[in-house]
Length: 281
Image 1 (cartoon, rainbow, N blue to C red):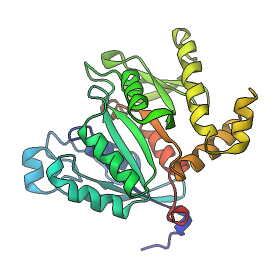
Image 2 (tube, rainbow, N blue to C red; image 1 turned 90 degrees about the horizontal axis):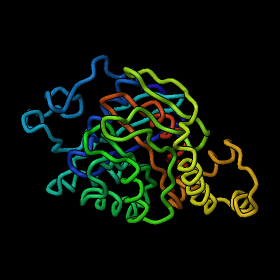
Image 3 (cartoon, helix red, strand yellow; image 1 turned 45 degrees about the horizontal axis):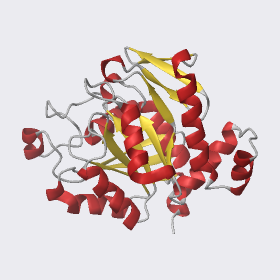
């Protein structure tokens, strides 16, 4: 194996409620990173991380599985875990091996029992986490309501990195609150567009929530926030990394793996915000 500097490692566990899209997310990330040439499907029994015959038959993950990829000079290990409570031991093992977590939350299901289990394990193992709202394109999905449910359940430490443009079948992209940019997707192709006029107030409110959460992680950003001064993108990114590393805050992203929405942004967030082994106690 080639030598990889420890500061370039990211060990990430995928956890969440059963059926919230963990294995599908992993499949898309591995495909986007070029590790697998053909994208498999959980429903078709062809997902690369669900390789046991019983998993393929039942179309669910029964055990922990892992794969690795390189991104922006970093070496990332993804650890996919089952969502059913019967296999919680596998999830515990995944958290024991990881330095950061992606906690999936179904956009049509909100905070479920598996979400709470993942959060509990994240806290008990001191594993920093990013929430990923999945399946935002589904008929009953409402990613904004899911974000509010996370804030209701876990408080102001929830830091929205993105908010969805549309919901359910009208979901078509997201607004990046860190950099103030909006992206629309057509047939998997991303295009930067102006922030929709009917979302300007919502964007301002959510950006305020992001800054409020981030300010708790850095005194300089806190002073700027309280005094109404502008916080640069670079300052905010550094502050978010520090806040995630110290478990002061938990970012939230919106995705649709089936429409390839938010996958590249998630890869970038893993590198930018989740800690390396050197940053862990």
